[in-house]
Amino acid sequence: EIVLTQSPATLSLSPGERATLSCRASQNVDIYLAWYQQKPGQAPRLLIYDASNRATGIPARFSGTGSGTDFTLTISSLEPEDFAVYYCQQRRNWPLTFGGGTKVEIK
Amino acid sequence: QVQLQQSGPGLVKPSQTLSLTCVISGDSVSSNTVAWNWIRQSPSRGLEWLGRTFYRSKWSDDYAESVKSRITIKPDTTKNQFSLQLNSVTPEDTAVYFCAGGYDSSGSAFDPWGPGTMVTVS
Image (cartoon, rainbow over all chains, first blue to last red; front, side, top):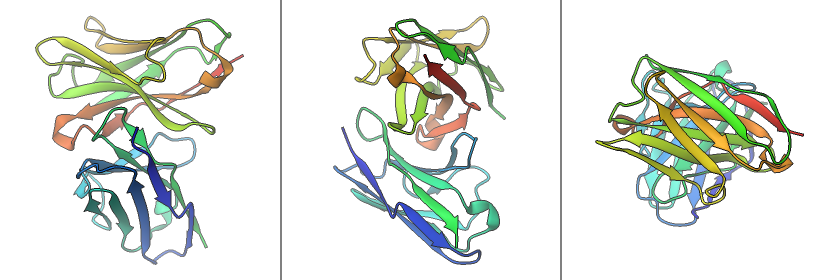
């Protein structure tokens, strides 16, 4: 099973700042990595698929990079609605697995 | 716009069967460009993919090894929905259960999601 490790666990930032979230895979996942945003009481929302492709309706301030084992989700300038938990997920190997999440909180 | 709506009991007794349904609007359960998934989330296990059903000239399914002996995911073409059955539940199966689509056009990533159903095994 591929283990996805996200860091940091918590990121404390102010609106307008840049957020950089990391996801590291225990094995090569090529580009087959997605990013999701989850707010309390809601289902996750797809942001990025296949490492760098924004999902429909996702603002341009969200971007994804990486391949192999190291991936990054960047939020260029945090909006108030961006404070949430973010998860990565791989589809390279069975079973499909998720990371443990990074919480982006207001500083 | 594809939307998913979930239904099913929020409380299940140990050793019994957990049954949930996900109704699809805006697409067909038989579409050959999407897979229909069940995912659960708990504080102890995080987000955990459970399995999927999909149609590509015939129906197929895939399941996580952790639940493979206890799980069935089935499509219902007459009601345009798919279901989850998890047998012999224990308190460790307590979680929020989500259904989700995975379209080929978006790398099979999970989108859209149902709203989630909190299921307690007690």
